[in-house]
Amino acid sequence: MRASQSLSRRVALFTSLGFAVVVVLSVLVMAAVLRVETDEQRDDALREMSPFVMALLTRAGSPDGQTEMDAGSPTLSDLDGHETILVFALVDQNGVVRASSQDHVAFPDPKTVGSNRFYEDETYRYFISPPDENGAVVILGDALGERAESVFESLLGFVGPMVPLVAISFLLVRWVTRSALRPLNHLRDEIAARDCGLLSPVDSAGLPSELHTVVATLNGFMSRLSKALDAERHFATNAAHELRTPLAVALAKVQHLKARQAGNDVTEVEAVEQALKRMSRLVERLLQLGRAEAGAGTLDQAIDLREVLELVVDERAGANPEIAARLDVHLSDASVMSKVSADDFAIVASNLIDNALRYAAPNSLVSVVLDAGALTVSNAGEVIAADELSTLTTRFKRHDARGGGLGLGLYISDTLARNLGGDLTLQSPAIGARDGVSAVFTFPRDEPREDASD
Image (cartoon, rainbow, N blue to C red; front, side, top):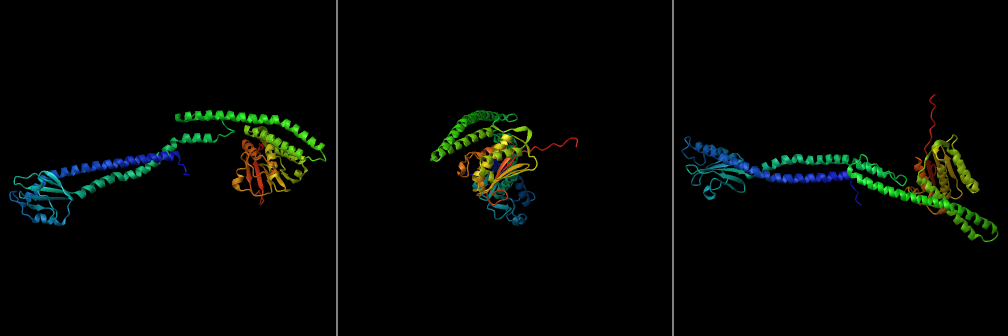
């Protein structure tokens, strides 16, 4: 697929091409006009010079102007070695050339072509003057090559500055279009900032009037989309709330039934139990998803995240001794203060720990480290390629089907991290290891204020 060009570049390019076409047409028209005007000017010069050349040639042959000049006059023979732009000849009433500027020029015969008119051959354009009282005429010739060269040089003097002018016009138009399209770039940035968590209307103040209708249409679309998303979130949240209690009751009854069937085949009962547990996890994830996509907020007062993480770890370890043996927890000695909500931090931490336990190598340790600015959860296992690793924070994306994951844990954690003003990054191999994965949740810290009296 061909890469698309920027709008400012396209406008500048097509404007410059249009200007270039106008210049070419102007040059063609100018060449035609210049040729006609040059021919007229040089023809007028030949006509005006003919009486003077007649007088000079006749008087050069006879001081009293009455005696005709003989052909081959030494006065004119000196010109034979000089190539002149203009050629001339004196022709008597019998058509005999009495004097000429160039011996090799084949002057036209006035008796054949007439007089007081212009005549043109392959090399020269001639003017044959009217005959004098003795019937003699003067023929003046102008080289056609000189006429063409004069037109070309004049045209080149016009075209020469036009070539850099076209290039300058492209740069100028490019700068003008970029400046003119700056509001469009601003609108693009405003639209790019919108997502499912931010669908507020775009402010059209300061935008050109042509973009007001576009902004109005866009705001209407985002309003309808926001209502649809809100309805979807409310439905998912309400459904999850309504399902939580019945599922808990059903799971408790199945576990009671399993206990009563001690010594019997409880395979089917265990299958129902696992299905109910999976549905319970799905309900829990849906509730977390609704909270994450609704937009997380910060607290007015900072809390110590160490205490929250200890509760999360105790909850996981207390429910399963095997998990307790696999968790390697390292907490900062100092308090880790942040205005992140305890519920939001607990959701992120529990999802990262559950995900690390689910995909870790069997019986391997899962490292949980909380320091002053980040929570890092690492496990041992296979190395995940960078291109796949970057997609694991998308909704319903799983590396594989081990442990019955739903593909929502990392998406929820990433969404909450961004809403809280933090960041969630995945690294493989794990930090300081040759395999595995590290998930690093960087959260905003609450910097202690210095006492003004200090």
